[in-house]
Image (cartoon, rainbow over all chains, first blue to last red; front, side):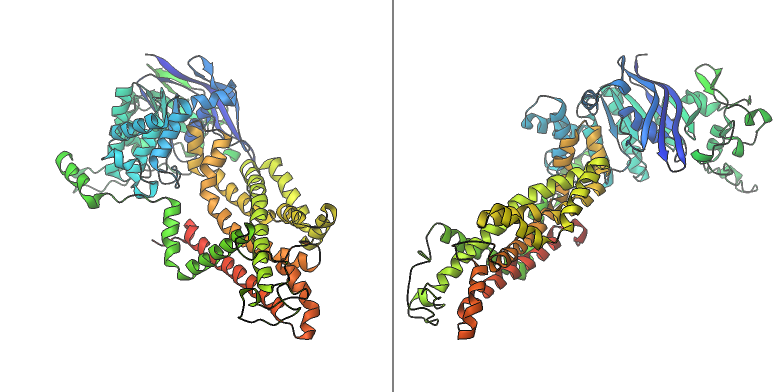
Length: 326
Length: 301
């Protein structure tokens, strides 16, 4: 497998009134060509900050990438001058945002916005860029694209806009596509269409996909490898089948159990209540000493309140940050 | 999806043509009768100003056309509004006053708008020390009473129409800069701007290509309001004897009228004030109507 992106010991902090908070704390992972890496976790666990860090789009101040490295084709993106970084953004690594409703500029037609990405990075005429935009809209499954390029965002539905965003992100054939909750704002049928589309495009264009979501169902369907994050740290990492069949971290297990199931065979039995993980994610400013999950963990031991657990191998390509062997 | 979709695609009702901000605004502005009347007045004044400028009408304005202080009469266009102390046509003076007023409005706006937009955009977009510097600069400027500042400017630059242009231009951008700054602060962290950054757009592209078109309506609204403020200020300066020299401006005409009223000569004062009334009113109405039709927040359905 060809490694496209290698994130090593990434630390991103935010300066707030409560002090300097480590929103992403020592996160490492690899992204391979033609594969999908899924990043899951609750709100505020650092998923989005991780993706924005890769693009170097962290608003500074208050945010800052403290340390670590992000190797792309042997270059460390964190050390590149900003002008070089701009050449990579949208051209080699692109991003799709969560909110298709607000991610498009309301005063330009979608054609204008797609051609902008193309013209910014490639030496092509306006006319060629527009043809390319039409082709991209066709690729993402928008009907009558030659007419739709002249539409303004407000004339399109949410699903259509997300397709436009994808078309925009893919217009320069990037090697890596980061999708930050690309389907959260869409309804379920459109969700399935968009995910199917991204899967198809990943295969046809041979790019790597980083899929950020809090929906384990999406991960199960789309991802090859999974990264489970909790309060800024990676708690479990492994191949998707392994994680779903054999989750080892109490947090991942908790997440799995929190998925509602509709088991009709249990009709007359006592109704099974949906299990949840008790408590809430600790605030980054008041992290306990030791393991970050200790206050909510059903298996908490004395050792958990001491040093923070490091990631350790528990199976082939399967690592967890926990002292307990489940 | 396949066959049915194609049928619908080709149906004429399936695709409404998209309208740009300007087309959309124009459609809404057209429905407002009062705004159209105001626009017509502005257009009419501009036409007079241009004709006077190129000598198509009312030339020469300083020729003696009758006795001093002859009352308005309809025997001759030149005498429609009577004559002044030197027997010059008040009607012609009023038309030339229009030229001065419109040029002051226009040139002032052309100086003030770029300054206001640029400083406001930089301050709002970058924030930090750039913002502090710009805010410090305009609060200092606006803390000086504006009429004092204008008087100081005209004394330094010498009397005349150029001083009026410069003085008004460099003092009247503060309000616009403030508004633009606020809008840029709001827009700089909007997702569409971050999305633009994520496709590799630099600061310049983000400021001028992405955010500016989203706030340009403020400039247009401000233009129409600024225009009439400039006209009024020019009249005040000329009345104080600091404005236009040797040319017929409404302010000079009103200034002249001080001595005339006691003798029952009312026409010079009335023509200047009525001329000013209509254009200022028109610009005010137009400014309101433009806000209604351009501001996306006020859009109905």
